[in-house]
Image 1 (spheres, helix red, strand yellow):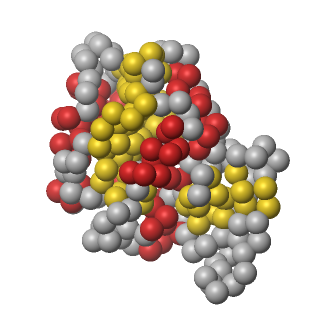
Image 2: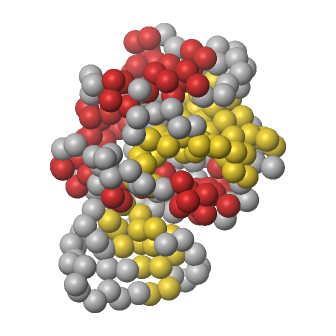
Length: 247
């Protein structure tokens, strides 16, 4: 994976600056409790922000400049994205939220699975939403709706979403607790939240450590939101498919 993609720091609308310093493991690390008690701030490690949530350092964000990588020709073969799209537990009239939708790589094929429903394609970068809007017109797709979110709120309708999925993006959320609570609020009772994340437990997955997540860490963070564990769909070559349910 090209190093430059994960060194891009571009968060439009953000109210904070990400630390860019790289520190050695041998250096002492300072810790300061945040005002709300949810996060801690450490010196940033390589490719990290230094912001700690439930023991995990939040990673840098890939900006809209990396759109080409999201659409790379080998992606389906490498990640079997076709299997993920096929196996998402959807009904034809579901309202689905694609959080961190990027270029709409998943939004448009998922929209074909919910012809009587719609896909809310959420991103915090207007440049990404402009790409989605352009593709809507090119493909004459009416049930994909671009949504400009923020770093703390995806701006989804309350109890209006049947399923939320997040592909390789949750680990980059600068405010995972606030975003998580807003997503839970958007889900209908019994609605599902699915995290697709590169497996931290597998050293063979060629992704930088802060851009991976373990099943145990995901369970810890989703439990903090009040979500129930359902399963890990272990059918992708490199990624977890971690399924949680709103009670």
